[in-house]
Length: 115
Image (cartoon, rainbow, N blue to C red; front, top):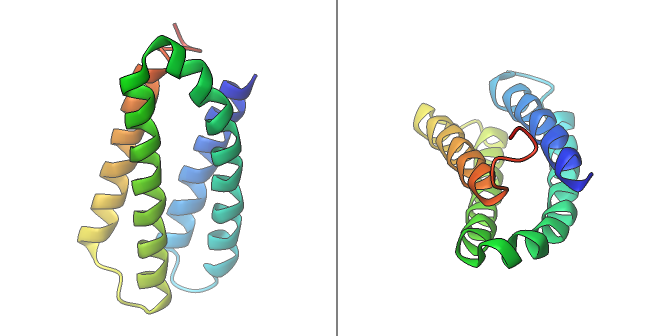
């Protein structure tokens, strides 16, 4: 159940990040909702961490570190967007980090719930 919550909020976070990054005006509510979304990620991630740690401790720890780095990069992107100094390089690095985080997450979960 927690894995499905984690995945549903991942899809929601992708939409919210895209709206907040690419929208010219009125992007602040999307940023706030994104922050609430990754709070849900943190809670479900802690629960899933202990299940994944038993199976593969290295990838579980790697996933936690990658998730924390993604949240930091997301906050830096939001700060640059607020100051109107957001660059294409930062947007590309944010989405590359998100893709990397998904790959590590699916490896850590053993391909579930899709396998």
